Length: 74
Image (cartoon, rainbow, N blue to C red; front, side, top):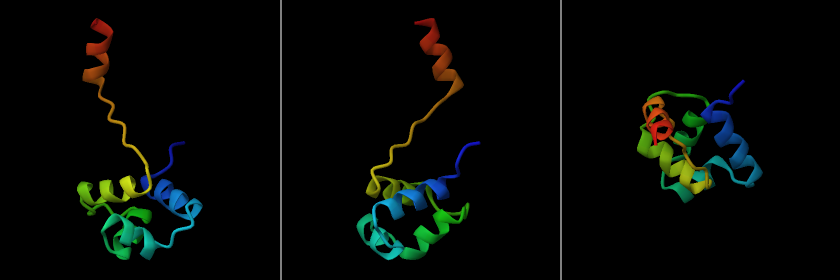
């Protein structure tokens, strides 16, 4: 079973010893945004989520079936 983005963010935040408020300061967003991400709110903008992921040194990997088939063809 895959973890939700919110669970990943929360786990990394806690392992880093950061409060929601402090992570928000580092990422340049409000602490409410951190709460919203951790609780799966779907209306948070991607660029805002990216700021939080960057602050936690989490990378996003994009996977596309179109790209995978292009790689197989060489």
